[in-house]
Length: 488
Image 1: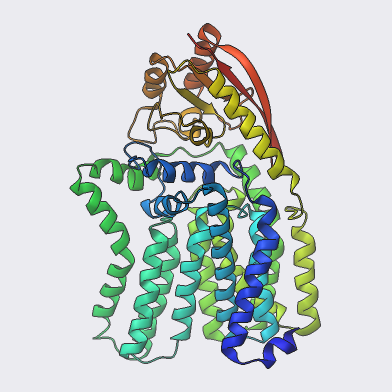
Image 2 (image 1 turned 30 degrees about the vertical axis):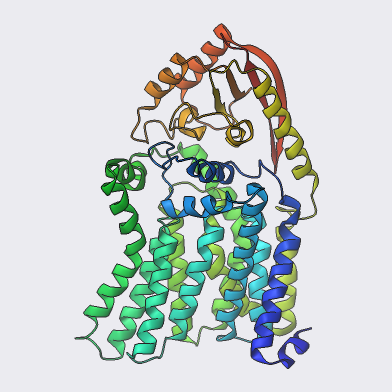
């Protein structure tokens, strides 16, 4: 196959591989299509995007700490008749495009086999790290990967209009990535530093201040523009709190939980790290490439560590530089092909792309939950305290508070992280006497906000009837979600 690919002209080869990556991405992810409960984060982002069409303003009418750029993406997906499928197809195309960029970057560094397998490795790795849906890095990884490709291709260019223009594009792409997830700033900062050092090495020491300031501005423009817009409409405080203050005040998880999460993530990411190290050792005599990839990996790692939590999807940004480095190992003939086969075999333990059952179950279970909630609401609204937030979209129920994402109410880690005092919001919601409450029969997230949990269950006991419970099946987990309705 690779001989045939290499035999055609370069534009045709690029188009052929774009189609190949799109096909592989579809095959690996199609079992998740149409699943309205694919991930707690994605369904909430899509809910926000949907309500933005109805006039809801992020951080004011519905609160979260994610940047506005991410909600713009989901606002676009919410245009479509089936927003769930639109989001999942959009994420698939972003993933395929990122794999193509990885191939394009590796094509400048190694043999065709390594470039092809490096791109495919990225697609294989997304599922095991819970990137099978619309997590933020699935989208912004494309911008960071493209920026890295542009920067690397200018590694030996003198300070010319063409070269600086390409780097300008790279810094603007980093700005878009930051507007989707702030931790992308570390990778953007590394790429900017690499370019600045390139100017220094080329002897442009007096002329480098201007380009550096321009690159910094290009990286900051999207975020500054959004902040200025919120300030103009009188909600600058809410935006600043969501973007900055909330991240500084969020509680750290208990040590035993952090230890478990970090160990689990280390076990999961270990195999591809070993392959990446093999690739870096293979280029130990190619100092510029070694430093570039090593620096990129360190920057992405810093972006993971500052989160002070180690869920599998937090490692998604690392998959781009890891796939590039692993591609250098995959280029080593038969040994490289064996390494790629081992990667597929190992990560099949964490993700089965042939499991269509979960999506079918999720559609049925979510429909049942929605029907129960709608049938037993006395018109005073629904509170999803510990359950799937997409129920608000399925039922058309209004938000009872800006704290719509269930963990913002039920989690001790998220307590008082927003500009609203959590316990007061819980009291205010319950004072409005919601007609139906949806919550897990056992807490799904530890540690829980004990005050909020006790208040909600006291309200249920005093005012509501248990009208049903549906077991929601998710990847690697299941939870019984109770519907307590006809509340008086």
